[in-house]
Image 1 (cartoon, rainbow, N blue to C red):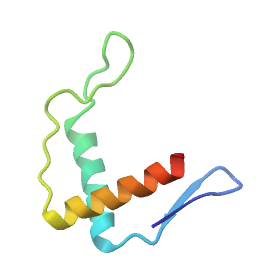
Image 2 (cartoon, one colour):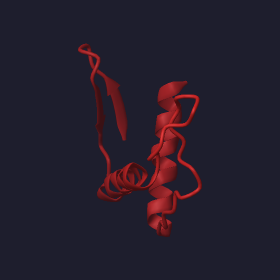
Image 3 (cartoon, rainbow, N blue to C red):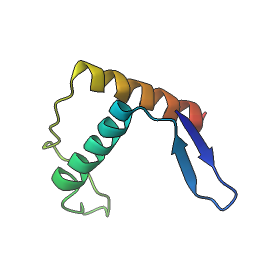
Length: 75
């Protein structure tokens, strides 16, 4: 997996495996549909306690790899 910030300030994520892609999109979809439904009094959006998602061992490994690459990007 490679994260690139382009000159036009867009970001490209490339080299994802199929499992990494489905894990990333699955979590994003669930978060969008099940979390962040109401803005808090402080103006922030919190996920609340209803964030529920089951991952297979393979998906959990993919998530760990994606997370590691993201952390490297922010270093």
